[in-house]
Image 1 (cartoon, protein in one colour):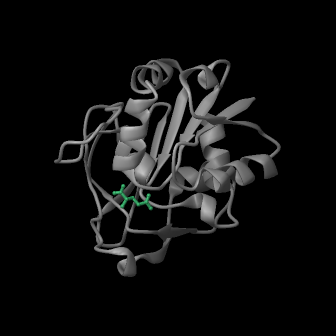
Image 2 (cartoon, protein in one colour):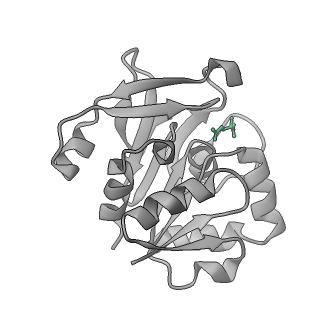
Amino acid sequence: MKIGVLALQGDFAEHIVMLSDLGVETVEVRLPEHLNKLDGLIIPGGESTTIGKLAVAYNLMGPLCQFGQRQAIWGTCAGAIFLSKDVSRDQPLLGLMDIKVERNAFGRQVDSFEADLDISELKQATGTDEAFHAVFIRAPIIESVSGDAKILASLPDGRIVAAQQGHFLATSFHPELTGDSRFHEYFLSLVD
Ligand code: GLN
């Protein structure tokens, strides 16, 4: 199995470490041809406007959308924003997931926080029972899901922070910044 990590901007290196620790071969994706022969793709956190502008500049928008027709894609934080259909402002989006996202929904950088999430799909898929410790850094929330998209995780107040739509996964938080590889394992289970 070969997994790409979009390496235009943001914390792609942390995803690569996590995948390598799981014994998965990785490729840094910066150009359309880097998508060849990949089984799945992770879009990291960072700044979604920057990732979008660079994806336009490197002619990646079309190839990424095409890749998503067949292969699994997971967006963390800025990556989740980039995967979404609607962020209530004008910026380049892949529009692959039927989710509406609100950027910086918890406030500024200093309002970043951590929380334990109870995610039944994750527990079931990995045969574990512990909550997932999630790191939120100037994070978005998923305002709503539509179509086939379903909610995977919410905060205690009901705000949605993870969603899945077939082979697409979106998380507001950063599993690559914890020692817990269960979300990466869960994503790999969506890759075929
Ligand atoms: N605030 C960033 C954005 O709106 C996302 C932050 C992150 O990826 N940690 O794109």
